[in-house]
Length: 124
Image (cartoon, rainbow, N blue to C red; front, side):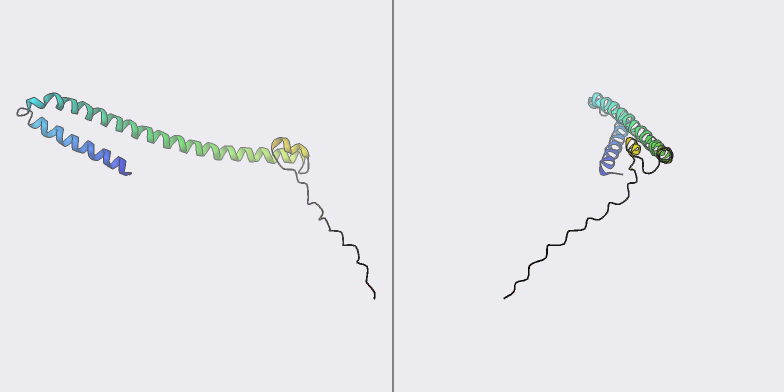
């Protein structure tokens, strides 16, 4: 859990304790009743938003797992199709380039450097 979530939950717990204590002693603290009611509302809404976040997080995780499954399945199908295309046209066909597949072209012969011309011998 990140420190931000810890801080948020700590604040919520503090508010819950404060609201509980105020509720027990509201008879002595009538002058704070409007702010007490306001904090109760903020606390309730905050808890609701935290629940929404948790639901969204769970939904995101489920969507991520589904996407991973789809990508895995799709990769298998794409590989099968690429093999089929390669089998149909042949490994050396330039038609493979249309499917973003590299045709087998073999190795280029090594270029041999020309030998330097013979140097004339100097005689004295």
